[in-house]
Length: 423
Image (cartoon, rainbow, N blue to C red; front, side):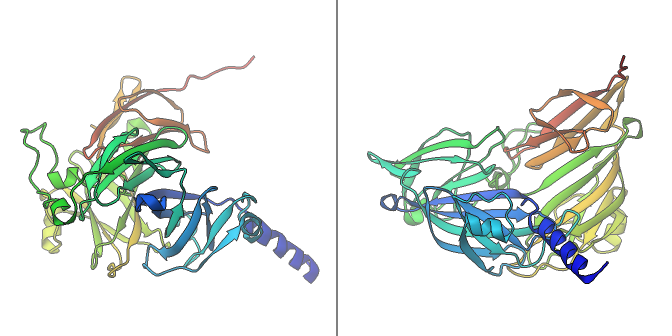
């Protein structure tokens, strides 16, 4: 191949890479309503860029809003990132294939290229919007009326304001300063058409600050006893743990899974996954999604855990119970790591055949869970409402979003797809 052909080929490859569609996940937005007369609110937007190899990320500025006081941070290190505000034509020229030429964008220069094979780049974008249509006075009340396309959101009322109305089912919390926080996870199609109304009347200063939450469980006796007060009054929408189960042949009782979570506790260098009773684990592996670095993983028993002087914290582990230990570099102050842990389980009681029906019976304690049926099976029952989709390779996927602070008991049944003949 001559040099001219090499240059042309290189240009074509570069063009293809530059024009691949931008992908993202794990979006979360916090809106802090500022003084009502400003018609302004501060937005903190957390998002994970997932386009393999991407070195930039574009965040659109909503039409009708005026943005100011922008800042962008890398969530792995906490360091600020370089960015510019560009128009749609420039964003398209720089690599955003589907850019709206009538919109403006915050163009973020990522700290590192997104790693391949499921890698991520987590960023936090802070900005202030002035938008009188979304945030306005209504007599002696304030109204925040805004369709929210992001699935996980929180709205923080101004100091001294009490909540009157909210049309989207939400968790109501109180922050450390006594401001009311409205938080929700939206699973329905389309944006959440949020309308929130509040007015002055809440306490301010030290009187507004909540008392410390207790670690005592709910008053009801087992098995109805609820989680602790602290667990029940922790914001569910901001929790970013996610588990995806991939069911294998039901005769094998096996399913693979991956579990994503963010570790931000300074000095933490390991994660202990305690295997549920009645299950055994195999093939553990893991990686840091921010960098692609592989984790060391080993399976120990409770007894060996004690011998190794590994502290399981408050977790009670039987001597013969399996524990998967994932090790990673100690987290530095002000930084965090996004981890993915992959395992295969054999769980005859949880996953089995009942006659000719597949049965998957498992409690989910995380906010976001998904189950992918094995090839050749179709869904006949799901005890908990789920969003049903087809994966790119034609498998049925069920997605469960649990905005409650307790676990949900998911029971799934499926049958074999009938063989069809063509004439």
